[in-house]
Length: 82
Picture 1 (cartoon, rainbow, N blue to C red):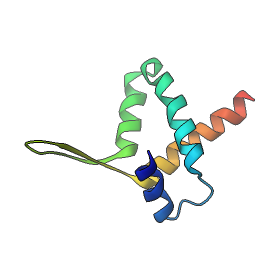
Picture 2 (spheres, rainbow, N blue to C red):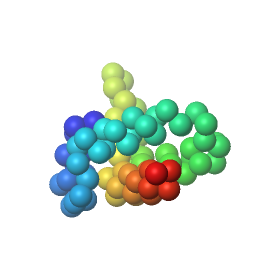
Picture 3 (cartoon, rainbow, N blue to C red):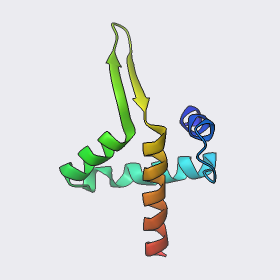
Picture 4 (cartoon, rainbow, N blue to C red):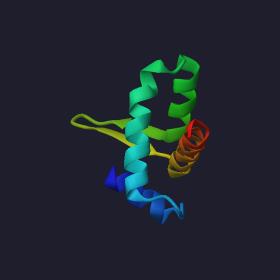
């Protein structure tokens, strides 16, 4: 999680704290299974840039701009729920 947050900060996504990334993504994990498959696919396309399979590892490259978009959507959802 820390590496994802650090990358987001490097890419210029101001206003996102490490704690916020951690909390929002943890909350998101709890609702993932309740999402329709089409929404799950949209989120995966939003977040995953590339997946490389190596003999001894799996490398997933995250779209930092997609992470910022997802966090923004989660923020809006929190505001509506409040």
